Length: 244
Length: 80
Image (cartoon, rainbow over all chains, first blue to last red; front, top):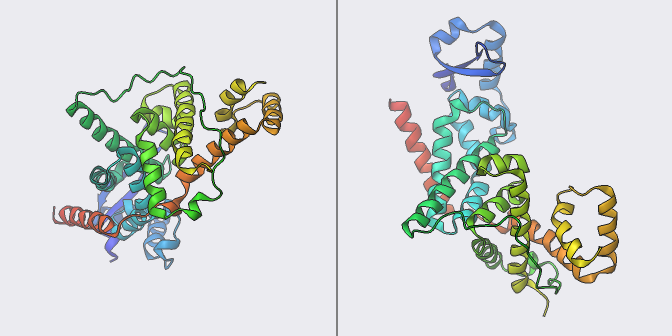
């Protein structure tokens, strides 16, 4: 029997709910309780000759949920770099970023059975990572007796000061490390509440509504903070990238 | 539209949230005001730089420690 059948999951309709739920079942019970089409479907999934790296995310998630660790590892490999980038730019230091990275994937592994696939797997990871990152920032701030909310006023005016154009293609002319450091430093100059909005909306491309839900803000506040964050980052980067 | 008004609409323009009429007015302003055009272009470029995956690497040792931690967790679960 295939390894992935050791802890099997059978899809089942949740009584009184329009969504599909998942229930862990021992292998023997699966064999008895599963209808023929479901069994065929499960066999096709686990015996599929398709390479892991070529499989669509939804299939990998289904296989990972059924206990296939290799499928979970493939998902980790696809998104580890992006989650680390988010964690680093949110927390601003390597130690916290690595902690956030590990916690995100450990929690994802632990709570995978609860993931109902009503959002993309990556969006689910981003939610975990941002919560972990913000928790660390709060702790850091409370150690210093500083609040995380930086008294950001959503109707505050931002006026551009730098009007010089940038050198052409700085991403090609600067060393990668130098550019990474510049982007990190500029993000750290933002108050955390603006930084989180910018990273979620512009870097992770979450919608205004998703960002608002995740951060406990109104959509209006997300838009106002995004505007301020973009303008402030532009000013910061302009100092390093402007033409002489 | 003056520069102050144009500046306030740049973020909405980037999000595609501007109504057609206002977008046309802003386009006309950006066409004749080099300062606002630079603010618009460099704001776009700011976002592009943060999104550019090529400008970021995951250190190999950080990746190794992540996969070790996950394997430990997987082994713990299997032994339960």
